[in-house]
Length: 234
Image 1: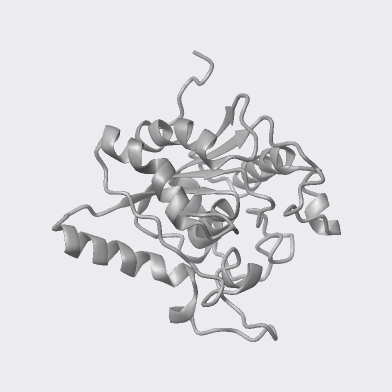
Image 2: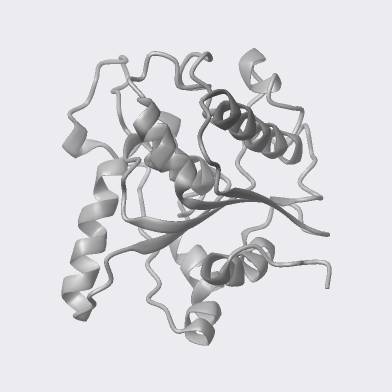
């Protein structure tokens, strides 16, 4: 999943070598600024219009993913029951909110890298900063926490003045920069799973020497997506 830049072709190209190496089908959907305008259209899933009115679920950006998976299977004669998902920056924002919207989506592994801010897996924080009043059941949380989900953070992604970084009051409570906010997101998942007495199958991984750079993150994300967290300091 591309970032807020909407550069799906670049993301595909930066992942192409890994698709060839590990022999998987690579899809990089493009959510244009015309069809899915602004933050509400892409990273918040196109769930409301510019006036805040609800948009029908079939028109959500999130609702495009499952039909896309089925179309790729049909086109390639592939019988996979599940797929794996990666998102960087705004793509990570899309990815984790997609899983909130579809907690039983056929995603058997996901790597979420360097998001600017998060919807916390916290039932006491208002949406879109948390899941309060979103109708998220304990069963849905259980499904979400049970999947293999890796929060991958570049340890150089620490620019608190990055031009595309949200700095409103509630976002700043998550941390001053992306590296800190990723840690906060993961820690809230640990806290919520403990409070709700749910098993958590999530992992936190660090990309040493990498800043806010999809290409640098992809090098580590590809084997993690296929094989799970690895010791990146070997």
